[in-house]
Length: 231
Image 1: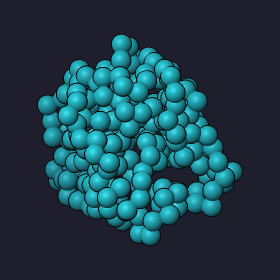
Image 2 (image 1 turned 180 degrees about the vertical axis):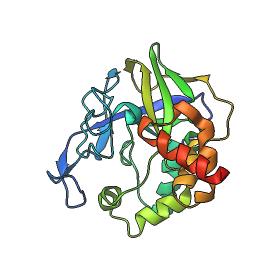
Image 3 (image 1 turned 90 degrees about the vertical axis):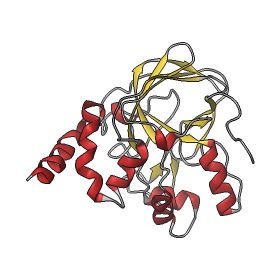
Image 4 (image 1 turned 30 degrees about the vertical axis):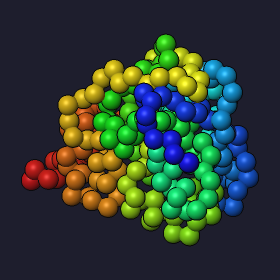
């Protein structure tokens, strides 16, 4: 499939999932919500009811099993680029449908890896999202795809997709345009933050440049990284 971005940045698909049993999860009830599928019609997106550990997804009808690691204010919506799915289709030799990586939004015409932490997207007439952090692959993701060595391979690829918080609620649908309303002037892109968290820990002190746009539960850790580097 070739979905290169000849058109303007847009939402290709809005995806939601229901909890399903799996052998590849640390969730106590043995379920996962990673199996997300396109949703027809406008979908409501709003801030979850609480932080990670309490609040779930920001996308109406989307269920999350492992609240310790997913959902909440700062991981309300997960976006992944169709262009990156296309690369993986070629590499894996199998079709990859929208939502198969567990993303709520499958985008087109947007370099999600290059999104800056704190960057704001307006989608449709009302919804405003703000980028917070990259997705870190886990064994649930690997088990769902059934690919040997998937966590290492996905990490080395360096295009993890981005989590967003909901700044202003709204409804969205496939085909809605994406407009970048604000892009902070710092170097901490989603790709940079991902490398700092995984393969390039030497980058960690520089993550502090993202400031209060970082997830609340990660700000103190980032401050410690910066303080240690300054000693």
